Image (cartoon, rainbow, N blue to C red; front, side):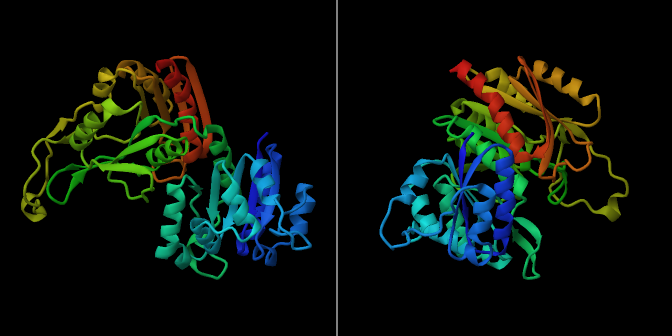
Length: 398
């Protein structure tokens, strides 16, 4: 199993790094811990050493203050580096490339994938300097596990809590599974939900948040792909290293997809596209008092996915089927065949807790060669499994 280098930086969340380490161990990973001096004020090295059965790295220099090469050995002997928690100070030092401590020097020498899980006060996390440092790290290929929101140690309420240890380990394993497998490939992802105007202020839309499409795009980027996202009304942070094209309506999405599709290797249509739109949107706002009852004349929108699938040459085409109820799986199977898709991803939106706004999903990935069910998991994990299913098809079409 892979060897994980766990960097622990200063902050009250340092105690949660013990849980992260234990979960990694239970899943069969070897874990070596390196602590900053600030981290030792919250959790002692003896705790990690006793539970890991390994020495804990704390000093760049040895007991006699002589230069050594321990940081190089740590960098060579591990498959992935995880910094959890990553304090604002540690994030800043990583962005600046400082190597005056054991963790910093090891990360500078480390050539494998790096994952960080920030944890800090909300105001520190949202400060422009921290935002810029995180953006710089992401542009260098570092994967950030977004912090959670809630009650913080100082009594504030907001974003900045360390992500759940299970989610952190899930992200680590997903990164290990997919590192570099899409290098040199171009991946086109649609995300969100289209909005079809009724008048200048009203629209026909749906509840899609874009979270699943965002997760797929970020997973593809982590695997080395050049990623373009066609974003339909998505209010989520945009990541450095991913290109975004706004496409608010079905017609906009269709036009953008037609323009981008010829150059891509993989298309994943995760957006919820309206099946109907008002036939004649009004130029002025409808006056409720004057109209009374309102009847809408709806016309069908273009079937974007079928159109693109019919134009494919070498591209792998993946669709989504957000169904409601137990009969949805069979409808998804028929949809894959009818539209001529390599894969279709079925999810039942009637299941409580995994709706559009949720960070979790449960999907069945359906292809010609068979099906794979992903039980309830984070959307990041689902995204990785979808890309795992894409990989052999992409290799066969190359």
